[in-house]
Length: 229
Length: 116
Image 1 (cartoon, rainbow over the protein chains, first blue to last red):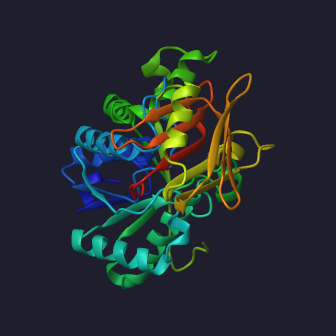
Image 2: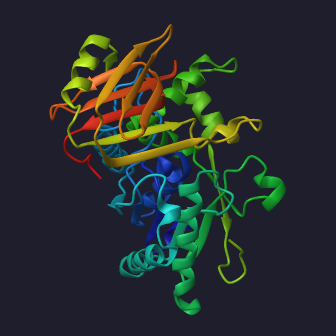
Image 3: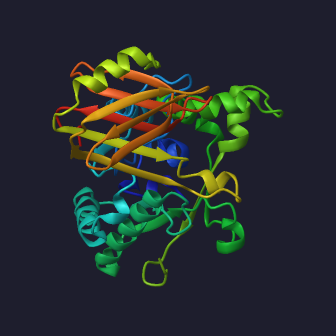
C-alpha cells in the first residue's frame, strides 16, 4: 500500500488516547506522505478511571485535562481534531442513526478516502463498539461507488481466532518516537500503563518495552455491505 | 485531592443539608476488568445531576477508608472514600482510589448542576 494514494484519512474513535494507542503510527506515516488526517473524537473521556499516577485529576477536572492532552497529542501527530461532544460511556445509548448522519457529513465534507474506526463488537469498551457501529453505518449511507475505504481496529483477546489475521499491518518502528510522545501527551491516562511496564519482569527500557508492545497497528478491511455488526 | 479530613468533610456535608443540591454518585471497576481477567465481571453505576435534599448526612471512619450516608426521603450511600477536594465553586468532591490512583467510587455534592 502506498500512503500517498489517499486524499484524506478520517479516524473515528470515542476517547482521547484511542488515537495515540491505536493509530498514531499510521497517522504519522500518512502525514509524512502529505495526506491530511482528521480525528473525530467522540467524547472527552469524562468518566475515565485513570486520574494520573500518582493521581492529579478529579472527576470534575478530568474533561479539561483530557481535552488539553488530546490537543497536545494531535499537535505531536500533526493531525486535525474535531471533538464531537458526546459523553463518555453513553454513546451506545444515543441514536446510532443520528450519530451516523453526523459522521457521514464529516466524512463527505472532508473528502475522506479512508475511514479508520473500531470493529464492533470486537472492541471491548461499549463506547468503542458503539462509535464503530455508527461509523460503519455512516460509510454504508454513502453511495457504494464513492465510498471511502474502511479499516477497523479489533482489540478482543481472541480476535485472531474470531476474525483471522488482520488485513493491514502497519509497522510503526520508524516513527515510534512520535507515537510514544503522543501517548505520553495523554499524561493522566498513560502514566499508569507506563509505570506498570517499568515494573514488569521483561522491562528493557521505556522505548524498547513500549516498542515491543505497540510496534504494530493492525486493521481489518471492512466491506459494509457484508459485515454484521 | 487530599486524604480525607473527616472534620472538614462533615462541615461541608452539614452546610448542604436541607437545601436542594445536585449529586454525582458512581462506582466502577473499569471497562476493561473482564478484558484483563476473564473471571472478572464489569460493574459500574453512576448518576449525575440528580437533584436531592437531605435532612442529615454523616461521614464515618473505618480502618481503611470512609463511608458517607445522606438521609433523604430514602438514602444515598457511598463506601470506600479516601480523598476529598473542595472546588472553587464550593463543590464537595469525595472519591476512593486504588493504590494505582484509579477511581473506584465517587460522591460529589454541588449547589449548581455539574458540568455536562
